[in-house]
Amino acid sequence: MLDRFFVITGGPGSGKSSLLDCLDRRGLASVPEAGRAIIRDQQTVDGPALPWKSPTAFAEMMLGHDLRSYREAQGRAGPVIFDRGIPDIMGFMLLCGLPVPEHLHRAAELYRYNRRVFIAPHWPDIYRQDAERRQSLEEASATGDIMRDVYASLGYEILSLPRASVEERADFVEAWIAE
Image (cartoon, rainbow, N blue to C red; front, side, top):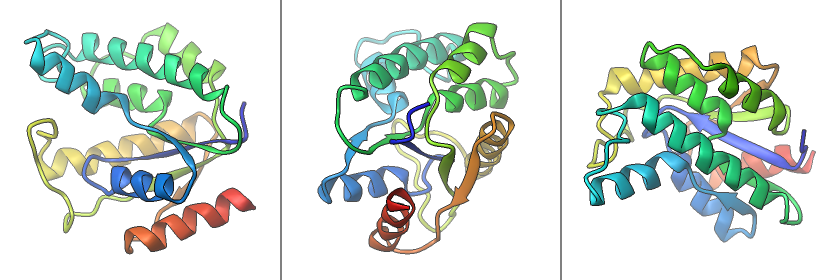
């Protein structure tokens, strides 16, 4: 486990990416989520690995991306903040009603993050759909619940981010990282 690798998870549209951008501006290294990049790339080439076309292919692409991102982050000094982690892929599979394959369980056990995981709670007031975020408000809420359950089942301590300004959320994360 790398104690300096921190994850921010939660449902879509709960302010994770805005928080990561703020932390990045403050000088903390960050790793963007795989899902949006994969969706953009697959839409560009009319590929099959989209969550609404082939959730399994999408999950496998996310796993490959996340494993590579984890290895690359090992070469960075200091704390690294991940916009989602490998356990999020497990949550995605469960949300889709699909079995979690053994190699994904193994990846979640081998590639560990700091025991404290930040979760952005469902926040309907800031949720917006777009070309890559097609989930309904209910699906977004369910995603957050599943992520909380998956990380807890893997032994992580869940820290809920406050529903506050991006700056206040960044202060919250930095205070816990410094501890």
